[in-house]
Amino acid sequence: MQSLESKLGYEFKNKKLLKIALTHSSYANESWGKYKSYERLEFLGDSILSLVTSDYIFKKFPNYPEGKLTKLRAFLVCEKQLCGFSKELELYKYIKVSRGEHNCGGQNRPSILADVFEAICAAIYLDSNYKEASDFILKFIVPAAKNPQIPDIHDYKTDLQEIIQKNPQEIIEYNLVGQSGPDHDKVFTVEVKINNNVVGKGTGKNKKEAEQQAAHEALILMGY
Image (tube, rainbow, N blue to C red):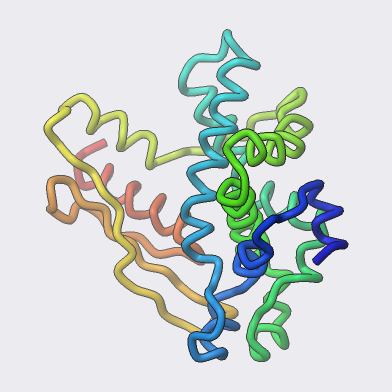
């Protein structure tokens, strides 16, 4: 782990956190509970990454309207970018996956590499503090945000959120309701609810993609 910590530029006090951040669910399942997967860390890391990136671009680009900031953030934290960050760190050398997943090249799968990057962001945060996690994240976000060529990314989740915010009494939530397929080729199913009523369902190769599809379906059903 010392070589990886050198690449990360951060030395963990609790090495267990780093090990968890590198453990795919397929490997954890094979261990019969001996090891934990990175899924909970990924959940936390996604939020930390979004906050750090939002704060940075908000200050960096004071003339950008909300819509442009949203598209830039989506570009900077998309799976392709996070996968690229992971490859810079050569995380594929350290990720633990099941034998079946390894035989299918799972440790090099973009969705896994992106998830692990988010998990490491959370691991650093939990091992130290927000500033340490922010400093780590910005080493990647700052170069990626220089002279950004923002693609035409349509963020259906943001569109739906903006509509719902016009009615403060309404509550929106996304729930993972199903997973299918082998570990190396999973399909995730997500439902989006407004006030506990299902208004859209989506599928995707990862949870983010499924959430976007669910939001898209909800917008169509709502007439947008």
